[in-house]
Amino acid sequence: MRVVAMVSFFLGLTMASLTGYQLERFGTERLVPGLVAIAFTRELGPLLTGIMLAARIGASFTAELGTMQVSEEVEAIEAMGIGPLRFLVAPRMLALFALTPCLSVISSVAAIFATALISRAYFNISLVYFQDLVLHSLLIRDIITGVLKSFMFGLLIGAIACYRGLTVKGGAAGVGTSTTSSVVTAITVVIGFDTLFNVVYIIFFP
Image (tube, rainbow, N blue to C red; front, side, top):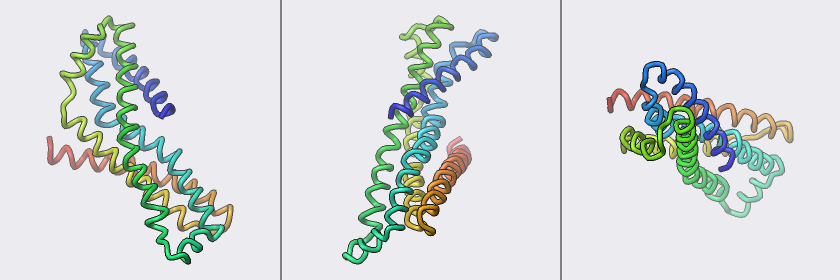
């Protein structure tokens, strides 16, 4: 949580300062709060959270399950009549499914807070006026879009991480290879799904 909040905070600072610098030339720096709020709530918050979880939690899941697969613990679980999918995969996917939207909200809040600091320090936008600009710019569908993306990112990351972990071959070296492959695949799939989601959303909800 702290890593996601910190990265989002610094990214919010950077985005607010850069966009504000350009918009100030045209006297429209008051658009910065709404711009950053919409960008993080709808796009950057879920995407950044998905990438961070794929690198941190996804790698952990793959390494853990891969070690169990190599040491034949998964086969022992099956011998006891316990399904690996129900016992090992389902709890992890459920955890990511519930965790990703929460971290996405934290990411967006951290970025908006950073934008409020930049707006107050450099563009003389008071906190009360900043709040009005953000609330006026954000729509309910922007928030719903971000939350839906977060749920799907959690499922995708969990499924990829667990699949790579349960299909490990080649001993300890295979665990390392599968972990690396899991992270790369999960990040690529998350970004690809995000792009596809945006295209479909724009077509059906212009």
